Image (cartoon, rainbow, N blue to C red):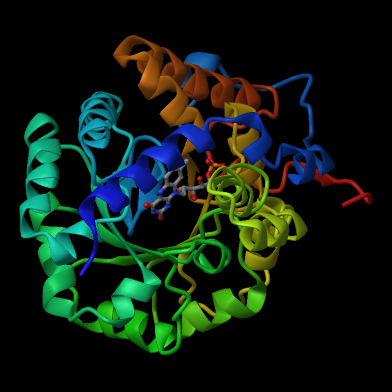
Length: 349
Ligand SMILES: Cc1cc2nc3c(=O)[nH]c(=O)nc-3n(C[C@H](O)[C@H](O)[C@H](O)COP(=O)(O)O)c2cc1C
């Protein structure tokens, strides 16, 4: 049985700490090692640029999504409703935060019903951590999807975080098999994402073998759960956790390295690769589209703007689209297919 008060305060701490710069890993993002190739004579008009992509094989007008974040307390519901409303207007898909609470508190489904009510046509993704997926029947996972009327289920992988939480659940044995079960039995596509520590080629191969529909690499370079849980350890005077967290404060595979790893997935039935983890501008996303990503996601910057209000959030979303289009114009790319490979990788990676 979970303690709801503890659960709520942990989720609140996470929001506050995620917004602090020292819990970000921009210094090791490796984004500087990639530049797009400038085209001085683009043979296109800015207004004709299309940022359309595909989502599970269907046309998707915008290639951005809000990455799964918060859930399970009153402030989170308001934030998720604000995010969902604006995402609907901008046609950005949005992942909600872990729906774990609903597994022990049936009433928690109301949060998702409220989010859906304010954004009836938004593309929303359900979310659950791998440790819970392992111990939860497909029927219950389907209920999480249904309460949000979600288009897909995201399973999140957070090995480092689970090790550094006093209340963590680093029980991942049987994880791959459980994801495979969801792929076969759930009535929607399954996406697997990291939470800021990235993915190796080996991990992606294993996920590819069981047929997941999309992989979001969510690599090192942005929000870092080692740093956040380390800070919680310091505040809670848990020396063991805070010391270990310092050792692991740069742990992970960068989003850049992860997307390069994904290029080596050679099988024909490859899942779509999504990029997130440290993406902070439309130019950052353009680099990942050039390296083969189908979608690009933001967590912390979206949270930062959602906290300020709906106007700040819409301005920021519009800015991301504008910056992506500038990068496309200045590489002579009328659509996202044309930006592929217009990229230079520098040796200091
Ligand atoms: C406050 C906060 C809460 C998060 N909670 C979840 C979660 O419940 N499930 C999940 O899959 N990822 C969660 N994440 C991880 C993000 O989806 C994302 O993978 C990670 O923050 C890296 O992206 P960023 O650098 O743009 O923040 C959370 C991130 C933040 C900032």
